[in-house]
Image 1 (cartoon, rainbow, N blue to C red):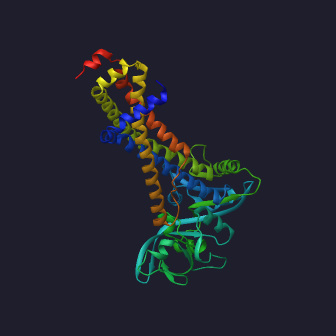
Image 2: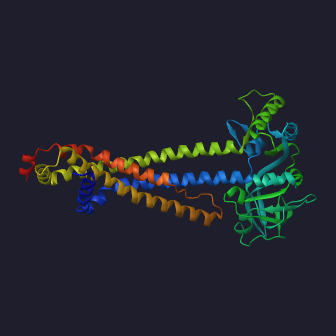
Image 3: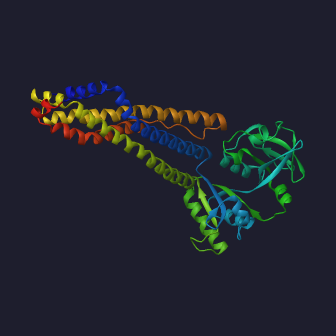
Length: 407
């Protein structure tokens, strides 16, 4: 018998037991749905993050303090050895460094028309250095202007502070209260998509230092490199200079120097771990689906014993019978895979739309590729085929005379 004819026989047999076939492929369907949705969203999130960093520019370097195995802008302020303006001067002396922007950030309470809410207060120098910070945050203005030289009690506020934090919206020209001091709103940022940035307020750094009575400490340093200089090499030189200045050994630094590629790599590593865990859980569903296919195929062998005997009596070989049953089990898995791929991609697309609508920013983009679709379907087909091997061997081993006598 030709392979194509055997393939058609296998598919035709499945169509005679549709309800059982649908129930059997359910485990494969659920597993493939979970895997495809997760990989699509995970890869889409990584693509979106990479896209944001590329839009900022690959020549941005960030420096923050660390302590106790943690590094963050807050840690920079509370560390026993915080970043200071002296560290900034050391970094400015490194060859290849263009502009260095100091940034102070802390939590604060903001008041507006008798209401109060928590916010993240940031202080930055007006001018080109502030632009480096805003570019790194992917912060662009929805209305108003940026902070400029000579501004004192002026503020640019995050989207949530402007539109959702208070009963009444905050508009350009309104006054908000910080540390019992009034600030006039001169700008509003577009929605960025994360709570910290959308609930932030930017004010001039000299005013910030006056408010918190802090003249030296720095939460973070943002800098860009001059054209023609290798960013990674400049970052290495910064680390070396800071180690010498702060008298610290390599590996025991109380600061962290990061480039855009470092952050992308770190994010990718974390995402891969999360994906591996969830894919492992989804694999349990695939295993259950495989067992279900095996059970169904064993039942099919019992029900069709006489049919198998008839086929052998008219010339079908053991290999033909083996092929038919393996194809049936493979097609069961493949159909479950196809439906699972469709549902998984649909879920990831709906999540993309929901996140974009809610946050106003494409933090997650459904990643759809032929490799993902083809790989998931091929994998489900293989799982089905493997699950059908033992029942197929049992069917192919039946003797024609005994099979024809089977009741």
